Image: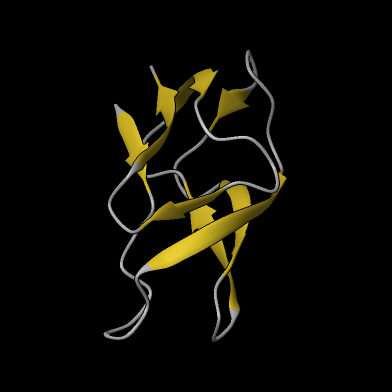
Length: 75
């Protein structure tokens, strides 16, 4: 399953990945925080919506991407 940057508010168009809390190969439970995002308004955590294994990280720490972009894959 693709993990995307969620909508973080009406006026938020993008977010910067500040820190990954999980690494490729880690077991993930639904609700586990995958990464921390920073926007112009606030800092937010991105939780997993499924149980599985973190298969791939597509956006590295420090990169800014638009809301809705795929940032990781959990299988």
